[in-house]
Length: 186
Image 1 (cartoon, rainbow, N blue to C red):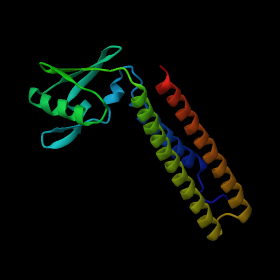
Image 2 (image 1 turned 90 degrees about the horizontal axis):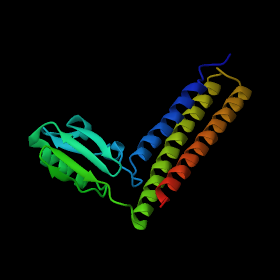
Image 3 (image 1 turned 135 degrees about the vertical axis):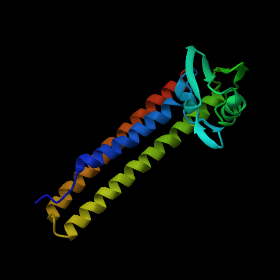
Image 4 (image 1 turned 90 degrees about the vertical axis):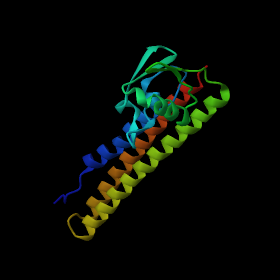
């Protein structure tokens, strides 16, 4: 009798943490323009905070420029303010109903800040994976306590969960290493 232990679910949840990490990393600047840089920007619009992509179209017309086409003229000031206050080191230039955002070269100090931020994101992903591991282990102990699985099965599944955790954390570390090299390249 196997109980209702689902290793695939734990794997899916752990890989969810990696997906979130990759999304966070895509927003980290590397000196090249990317629409993902503006992903975390929230604009105060119509009395509520809204993601930038719900009030404007974001595009990359050239390698070092992001263009934001605001749909409602009355929100241009709010969008400009939101981008400036997002702590991304960007200074939009208002051009009618558009904002042009030049991407400045990253200096050494800013690159180090980006690396620190990347490490913070990676640690959040590791913590998320450890939480999934803890949930899985607690579930296994409960199944054994309720006599739905044997002690041997519990040990075997615990080893599988630990192995999956180690693999996922190694993948997070590898992803961090790649991003770190990308940010530090001059």
